[in-house]
Image 1 (spheres, rainbow, N blue to C red):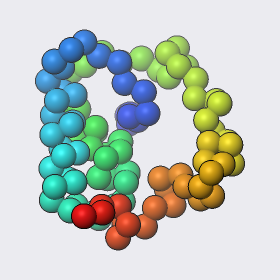
Image 2: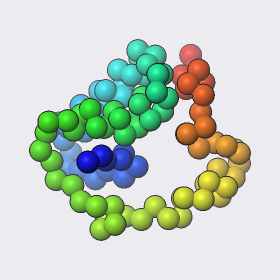
Image 3: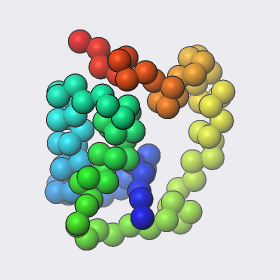
Length: 95
């Protein structure tokens, strides 16, 4: 099973979310751009934090609907091809 990080709800001080944040920060500070946004700050980082742990989850169908943001034209109207999937790895981190 895989999970996404577009919607997360949790109690304060959740150790799994803290670990996910630490993974993302480590990826950014370590200039780990291989795999792009998906690996650096996306679902892959969250999946690493979730690996081997028990946690409560429920289907997005019962929790939220992302429908209003699935049309790329309207979501990124001011920046054509602005969706994260179009980002070039070399442009991910600006120093």
